[in-house]
Length: 68
Image (cartoon, rainbow, N blue to C red; front, top):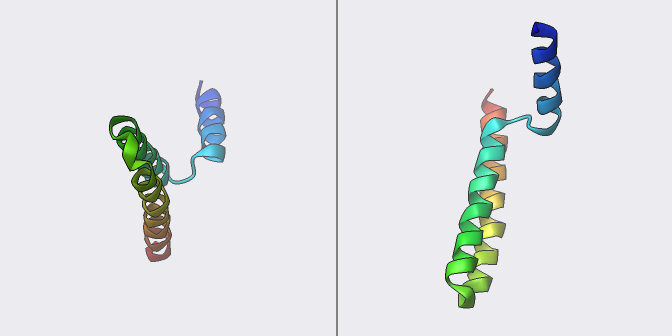
């Protein structure tokens, strides 16, 4: 059973290396989606949320990794 669990963790690790990065990007995408769905005339602002949110999360993740 532990071999199967190790295989599963290794497989997930191929796609999600940093849990914070994955969850934060999903949160930014969800926030941009909610803004685009609830306020359709704010499509450009939703794009800005997506762009600058993802860039902010990426910079934050790089800085966190550099401190480690």
